[in-house]
Image (cartoon, rainbow, N blue to C red; front, side, top):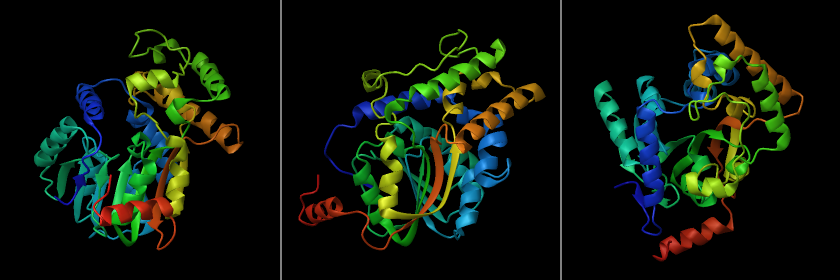
Length: 329
């Protein structure tokens, strides 16, 4: 196998969580803001690709001038919807796609077979423990998976190592407060905006009640519900910039919309002009707050080129020496 796990640690708890999440999503479970076609076409894609009809990954590849005959690795692919979209658009020659969830990988394989996509190879792997072959890939894709990684430095060292000279990291990520510990001001803005919405938009799919606020759960709650959620999200950009030259970056918001639309976004109907107008208006409010420094962007799309030297630092050299002498952990 060209992608392997190390033997240390027990990934069973994480695997079980993501298996359950994958099964729930297939059954049409609770939705976040990025699951809405209105949010994507009216807010996210115009901000990152300049057009509501151009997919964020297609736009990023075009801007950085990626050739279409390259070897890709996707880490944390889930059910691989974005990876298969990339395949349909001919963005790569071959791809290895890795995820910890066997349920997600089963869904991905079945979907790829149904679409006749044969140039993606799916493998199981735990991103906190994975070891990657040196100089194997031209591009590493991480789509909303890096913020679930606790051993952030270790994984990014592995990504740096597995890329060829001049290789690219493409990251689409949540980079906001760790474990969703949002500041009070951000929560007040969300609460005020929720109060302006008609009640038909605010029915919460998790409670069956009208949503009036975003509830900030303490870290102890997340330790039980999902220990990996945004575990070190506040360090992602710093650690990427230590190893890669970020040549294309789009900060597209979410500090308000992520919290406001969680579990109610399904109430907005893309076929109703009024519903679309409400989403547009909320997007404009968020953009205005971000432009004036009231809030920061909690989501980012970026393309980073592998830095030829430095970057990974002493810790990675220690790990490489350990690997050389058969002492890797």
